[in-house]
Image (tube, rainbow, N blue to C red; front, side, top):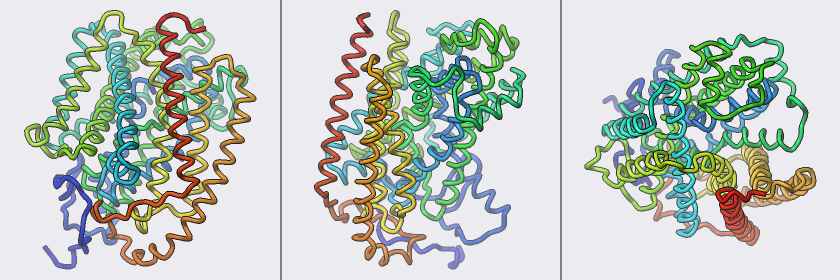
Length: 546
């Protein structure tokens, strides 16, 4: 190996699993550990990008899972192409949020759950991972509901479809090869491109599509129902599992700061692809059901497939059913892996797709147990599958604030990211986006639990509180930046090779009074919101939802 190709390695590493170090073995290529990232021809850069691509594409396309496909199909069926503008706004939102977890993964080599435990304590780690496990498990149930509905279109019974897909998911992940698993995922990513011919089969008209993309509005005007649906569409964009999954998957693929810009390109391409696919689904149902008795009459993924078959031809119905099953499988794989990564992080277990089952028993056992339990629930006669689907959407909204707040705090922790901490500009952009997401999450949660609450006054109060929060965070960020400037100067020169030192060597975080108050308020919000949601779900289950 030529000496000039050997990068300067950091003297210490925080990486917890030795399988997370070594050459990058991607679905589309391999990058030796010693290979330099120095300037290279365009063809070589494209080959490097191809080898690194994966975590960003998978997390983004996985976002268009069974729930996402149903939500976007419902948006088109109920509101035509008038909500396409929402998707345009979601592209930068996706990129900003996921860029932060990509940076955390590449710089630290430690998963999201473990960082929360080390920097915020065991309580918050248990709280975060416990919430994540519950939400991910229920989300996994909805993925098997999608499998059930999609394959029922082809006449396959749940007793056959659900177990077959469950076994297939286990077989894909337990190969002992990260590269083979990622190649399986790429097959599903390519299959998701069927969304675009599906849109073409509905014979869309260009003018209404362009209007929907460029003119914010909603068919029939804004009211409480349409506003809540817009919030639901936004809520499908960033889920807590995405943050945990991509950070751990970046680490498992052995991506370090040398290759960070390629992984950011992977994430950006994935964000554009997933929103374009969501738009294609909206267009397909918008024009297929336009001026028919099916407009505004969304039932389920199965009824959409059947309706498309009648309105746009049998090929459209079959394609939508395949898309639904495909989305369910890739979503199930990513969501379950996010949980297995997090649990293994917390308990110090080996957790890598580079390892075989015998070498990482706990990691694979948690994956298999979740798959088996979720599949079993879907097969229970009379199980409240519709109620589970509704509950998952709202629970994701309840848990979003804590996940996003921890992400921002970690990205401003100089002990964790050193010279890679958020810049002032990144903090402004991220804080605005995060505040909007948390605000929408709060509105969705409260109005779901209290459906008679006037939306206008509550929104005004929430916006006021959000503005005060932005001002407070800006002041805190300004003080923190001043305190950290000297430390950053000492390491900026080695920024391209700097990685977080071992966790035991990190200085404990110093909490200000404002931060403590904020964390107590966040804890209180989560407890109250979860309790209220549980009461609401109980009412719905007993038939007393009034």
